[in-house]
Length: 262
Picture 1 (cartoon, rainbow, N blue to C red):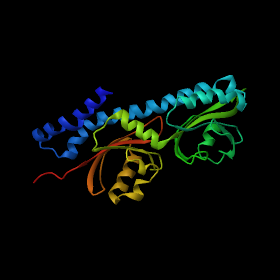
Picture 2 (picture 1 turned 30 degrees about the horizontal axis):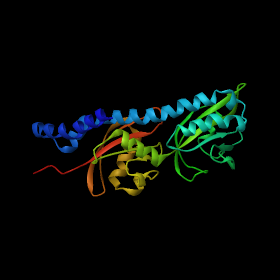
Picture 3 (picture 1 turned 45 degrees about the vertical axis):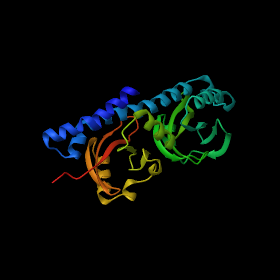
Picture 4 (picture 1 turned 90 degrees about the vertical axis):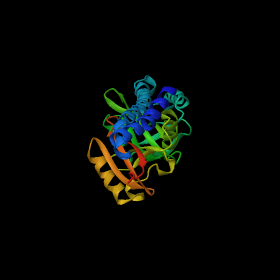
């Protein structure tokens, strides 16, 4: 962790100033030179966090307990998963018709069938990064789930609803970014999945920012990676972005910059 913080300080502090002095670049241009390195670190940290949860849901989904679809049997491994996942809002098992159980509540009496991601689970596909308001907790949640297959048929799915605000806060601590750097992620619809400013999680930037931010979001959704500039909160900002193959999110690292001196 100390190494990560030191690298980021160099990237956004000591390195930026000399480059500006020697080459006469604006702070916006200078930011992009080394921010891509930090963006890769950010992307790797996000994906490692979610990939770790996914690896565990896959393991549990392959167990005899999960394939039995018997809640009294599958609850034990899911309880162990809940205990080892600090950012979890709920850990659950869902049956093919949509009824589901959580470690915290047992049978919920509700259904996940209308959730958009449920069709992927029924089709035998993992889900990583779907955004929902949890039915069981009411929290803004990120879904990681794996289908359970028994005798060639979908017998259910095991999943984790991660508290998006908690994930963002733990990423903030892990990354150790300077205070003037902002990080966030957008899903395929342009909705904020995670954000260093927790109150912006699940907001649509195009609804809360300037027209230039709306244009920047369109660019970020359309292109696999790049650099955008926009105005937000009374300052001009430069951001680098790259898509995540694991989640389908656009991961963004940005910085407010001052106007060049005359």
